Length: 268
Image 1: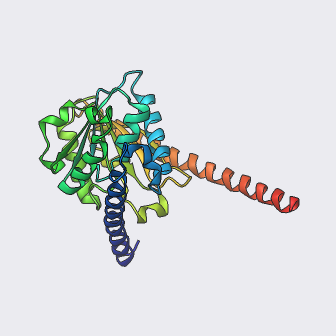
Image 2 (image 1 turned 135 degrees about the vertical axis):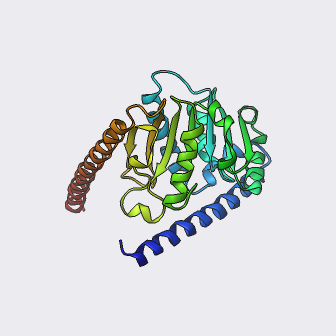
Image 3 (image 1 turned 135 degrees about the horizontal axis):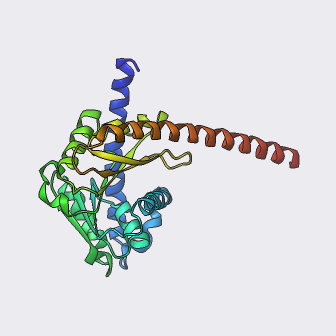
C-alpha cells in the first residue's frame, strides 16, 4: 500500500483502539450497577456473542495443542475494563485455572476488578495488575499460557517489541496466543505474521470467515535457538495453507449463499 493509505490504516487502528476502550468502560460501568452478580448480565454488551465464539475457538486451539493437560495459570496482556475473554474462558472452559490480567490503565483495572468482585468463583481466580508488560520479567515464567490482546502494540514495531520481550521471559514450552487480522480486517487491527514470532514454534493460524474479526495465532516458546529457522519455514507454509483453506471456505460459503438465495427467491 502507498504511504497515505498506510497512514490512514494506522490512524484507523488507533481510533478503533480508543473507541473500544470507551465502549468497554461504558458497558463495564453499566454492568457494575446491577445489584446482583454483574456477570449474569454480560449479554447487554453488544459484542458478547462474538467473544463467546472467539473464546471457544481459542479454547479449541489450546486443547489441540496442550496434549490433554490443563493450564494452571493464564496471563492476559491488555485485558482492559471489560475482560470478557478471561471471564468467558474462566467461566465456561478453564474452570480451575488462575487468570492474571495485565493492563497499563489503572481505571480499566479498577472497573474490571469491581466487575468480578461479586462473583464467588471468579473473584478467587482472577487477579488484576496495573503495569506495562515491558516491565514484567520473571513472573512471565509462571504462566502456562499467555494471551496478547490485538491492540497491545498498535503498530508493527511496537508489536514485535512486545513479542520479543515475551520470548525473552516466557518459560520454554509455554503457549502464546496472539490475535491478529487478515485481509481488509487489517484496517481495524494490527497483523502478526508467523515470521514475526522468532523464538516460537507456530502451531496454528486461523482466519475466521464469520462476524468474528480477529485472526488467531497460537505458538509455543522454543527451548533455545535450535531449529528456529525450520520452525519459521513451517510457519510460513502453515500460513499459506491456512489462507488457501479459508479462500476455499469462502468460495464454498458464497456458492451456498447463492444457492440458498436462489431457492428462497423461487419459494417467494
